[in-house]
Length: 281
Image 1 (cartoon, helix red, strand yellow):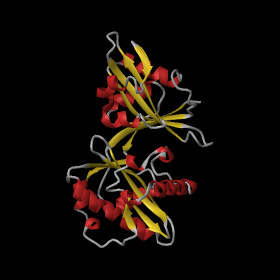
Image 2 (cartoon, rainbow, N blue to C red; image 1 turned 120 degrees about the vertical axis):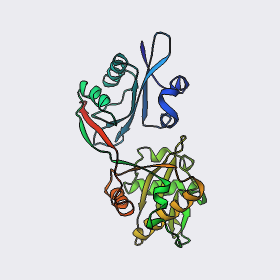
Image 3 (cartoon, rainbow, N blue to C red; image 1 turned 180 degrees about the vertical axis):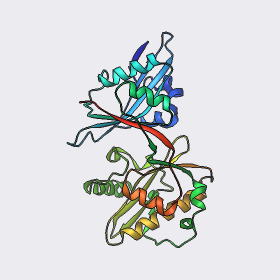
Image 4 (tube, rainbow, N blue to C red; image 1 turned 180 degrees about the horizontal axis):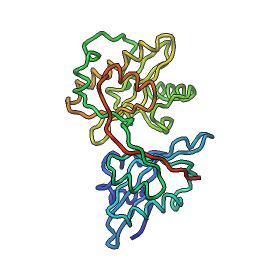
């Protein structure tokens, strides 16, 4: 068997292991992929990780987004290539993982990761769950709350630059590199004041049809009201565009996200998961 970096040239060979969404993410700046092929040149494993904080001076973290292997041998080959940086020169200080099954957690533990069993920071709901809340009831939204597709390219880039200068990038390490078309421009929204964008709620619609809020931020004297109206306007348009069973994944890593979820869906709970960390340097 042999290990290789997953790139544009061999992406199709690993498509069935990666899935649509992970394959799309591998095209992003801070995502890396490792794959294993057997003696018949057939893909039997893939490992995908995202670099966190690589452009800061706080140390680089790696979140393993996918690790799929057909055997312990395949797992071992990928882990060795990953830990020894055989294909990429990134200097990683800490590695993290989150999985739903105990067997996978055991594999991570066998190569030095810690193991903790807890509720996931990621909440999985449906659009129908939101539609049935008090928050989603019909209400008037002021004109300065606009859809992302109403912004020009220059307005969008200027807003991103402004937000990054304020230290706001949401869940996106690569916000500076993503075009507005990477988001669902029909349901992503912004707030405007004095010819500038002072708030954005950016939502990704993945190739497989999952909606993922990626950035939710506003500033200025009316930021709280703008956050409220942006979220409502986005949900209203999403309910018109997508069926009720459309899945939504919400990250609750940041306090602002936890607070808004607890208000809108107070009884919602994340899946039970296993997670852990390993020091690399």
